Length: 461
Image: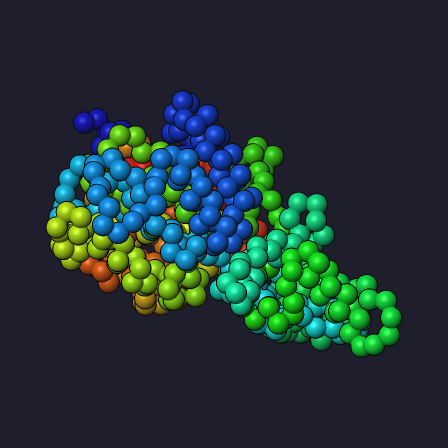
């Protein structure tokens, strides 16, 4: 071994992925990212993600799973949990007693949910009251165009899809103070400059003809009834989400990045789904993709990662082979596919440069997440990290290790701890983002593509 080889072996160092990206991978990377942007434009809520996931899966031969159905190696099945969580599997050659190869991501994102009684009038303007969902910086959600997506469910069970503001339709909006009158607001911290109760959607301003009170509200409700067929009382059984009215687009003069709403965590969810759909032949072990809801608020509820529906789906698969779920899980591996924060030179003080993810350096691996002393983390074992290093290197995946900022600067969590609680070896991995949880986040195309390659490697190994 000469001196140059010796130094390369002993010294670690990150390299920009474009320096080592094979020329033959540029076209596949471009195609993947174009498909990813198209997915993001169709899937702005967890319901829309699950629905689009089902559509794409059925195009690739996946069938709805029915408990008790006979399964053979190569069979492709999916299970939709209440239309907001999606589980997919490709049955492998080996027995489930030898475990699963799994990737788990989440498809919910920070947003503004309508309150149960949202519509009101003030100052002869109609508004919709919201309750923010997940960790947002409230000041970022004012003075931007917004859309309303979701469903209204009638008392007879009829489900009415609602989409307001898509394409050329009129948008919704939250106002802010003009700088001329903002002297007192300017004295507040960023966290307090906009209060949660001020996140009210400007909905309408034209009054209904005639006399009486709340004519603007009445006119707006009349329009809703004429288009969708529901009344004000039906808001009580609705799930309506205000999301940014931005389309996914290229960022940078060189088109090397992607800007979109909800890349946390749909950048990883799409990669997990697409990697499973693209599997060729029969994998060695059964490959499972989990697209879960509710991660942004703790992974609770019937569609969150702690749901028993997930365990039931896997238990059903195990029963077809006479294998106990416990035996299967203890031999399984899960890549917890969630985004990481990319180093931002505009705010260097909260990052540890030596342990941060960088744009264009590949998928980010996080041994642990949590906050302040690894609180809430699963903290993968060294053996698990070594296993992932090996399969990524063997499959040409560019990757980097990272943490979520400086030790006492903050932190965050993923679904990894809920997989670890089930006795599944788990490691976090995902796309590094700038401006995570903002209404418009930025990723690098190379990192998105490498995350897809990473997930394919997990399914195949």
